Length: 110
Length: 113
Image 1: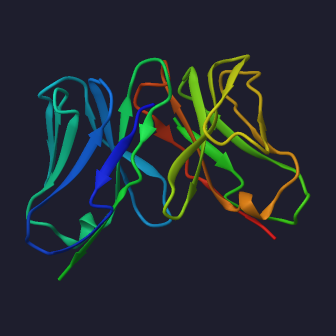
Image 2 (image 1 turned 90 degrees about the vertical axis):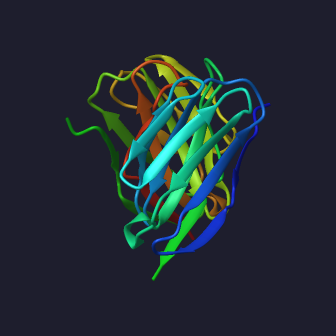
Image 3 (image 1 turned 60 degrees about the vertical axis):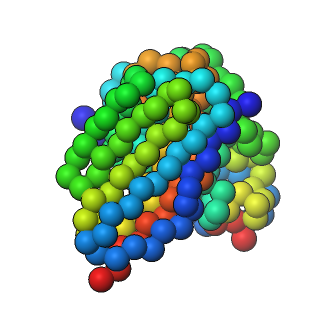
């Protein structure tokens, strides 16, 4: 059974600082997705990582995938308040539904 | 495109009542699914469908029924609502197959008293 673990689950960081959210998974996969959820809202697709070594960047967020280590990272650069949200990773293991991590609740404070 | 739509946005039920949460998509997606989201539990898969006429159970199917008579629609039925079914329900779809990027609806917030 695939397990997807995110850490940390809660993150409070100061504006302007850098930080990384980790997504570890327990079985072979070469496709991983990152989603963002604002409070009271739905999930919005952030990044689609489709192969080993894939790196995607948008604004202050950069996601990468290391399939050999079974690890994806979501790096936040110079955090701003607008990045406060919950971030989920989701892993594809073939012809079965995506398995989601429990989410990382990020709070960026002044 | 409207994307994935869900109705109602909010619903309050009494224990034992039944109701149907509606989900529709206009993207011609083959795969559709239902999740519930509870504090601290992340997203849990209830039921999913890989195409019209085909449904399967997810992680937490008890107390819920689904059917998929058309590509566009995937309703979720609560047979006899219980307080444990108080949650936020999300419908999602993807073009082909369950392992592809999912597009989520806006959610239905359900309270069972």
